[in-house]
Image (cartoon, rainbow, N blue to C red):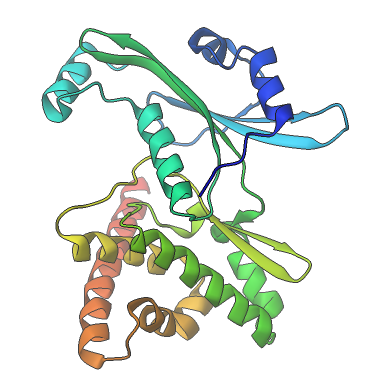
Length: 272
């Protein structure tokens, strides 16, 4: 797939605000920080701006503070190269788009290089349309639970997204409903996959990695879809209705989902 150039308003905004430099990206103070537990050295910022014609644009900036010397040393020993979170995600986005899987655009990334590895680094990406299935899934199924055409469209879109992604050799490792965005326009549905920081192409144990993705999907999707459509989704994903084949995948997925439920329950109990 030949990638089209970035929209000119995005290019101009990045240059105007020095977001094409490391210092500029870390000095940038506009936007809304998306704070949640467990971010560690990461800072995620949502930036909205308008161009000269009044059109609105949204970018996301992910900034990583420099790891400790010990962390840099461990990465050097483990990866035998300068490991960079931002560059890794940038490359993942480009590779996934090259496979024609719908996702965001990578705008730019940058990093501070040192003897033992990468220090501060950042990446800027575009937004995808719509909202996550985590936020809108229940409302969607409540609205369209009797609309067979719309339900069929939903199932075709999510199947296409996951099959294309896995068929290209990728696994996500965080394939939750929160990372699948759905956009409804003119009676049509569009789905995009986001958060590609941990994506990779496994060489071994592919069954295990795909099961992990599908388990995360089943665990996080609305209950209506799980009960009514997941079995059909799995058969279509596998391309077979063979009880032996489907049963093997279903047992592996359900075992992982059960473990995820137990872990979530332990966390709830510990937080009381």
